[in-house]
Image (cartoon, rainbow, N blue to C red; front, side):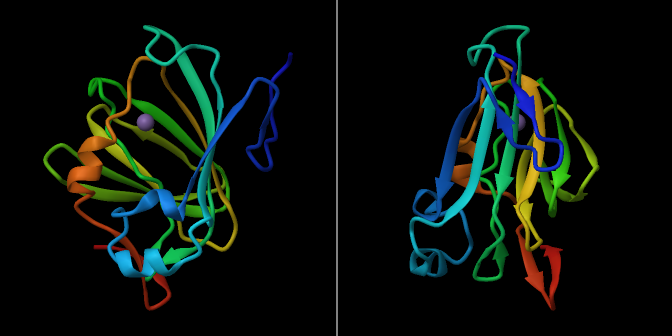
Length: 178
Ligand code: MN
């Protein structure tokens, strides 16, 4: 079966698996836990479609996916992905923005944290040993294409434990990392 990507929306069709994260799945990730708990718990925050031609962990393999982060905020903090380091730190990744507006939030192992603005067509290289998370700062779905090594692994636990050093919030109507 031919797998396709809709270049306008990032939507994958064919040999694809999908997963999603709802507000209920993200306890503890946002600064304002009371605001998170007060939102409808079945609200989808993000969805990931994957073209997984290789099993996770296959040395030398590649995986491709599109992440869709929905518009919304928890308090003043934009909807975002959990974020992760790669379990195998010595592995990089490419992201590119297909539609919507947002930010790629990055943090190295020393806790230095910065962000790259995303809009249709921006290309983002995530260096080795740098944690990464997407946030939607716009009013449409943020769709981001991703290509990573099948054996890089995902270390979500470090982020669940310590978070990112900075958060992306709306301040006076504008995204601000602080
Ligand atoms: Mn990654």
